Length: 125
Image (cartoon, rainbow, N blue to C red; front, side, top):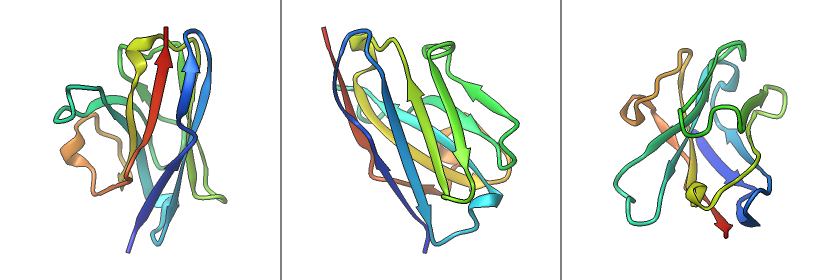
């Protein structure tokens, strides 16, 4: 059974930074492409693509809203994927979830096999 557990969310002021972590257990992490999605308040049915990283770590993609501000990375020994978020505006307030699938990345939520419960990020103005 593959389990994904996110942490690192919280309340931050406009312009601040946060680093999210997602620990994966029970699967072959080195074979997984990983991604972060988010659900904004009032749009809980929509999973917006935030960032993805392929299984080797040399392929990274970002959603237009976060390019230049967010950085995705992975640590295979720790079976963890990170999302470093800088210069946060209130519009980044959302529940952030990590997801995994085999090998290649995809910006579509339905392409992912396993999901975490998410961690809440709130950016105050």
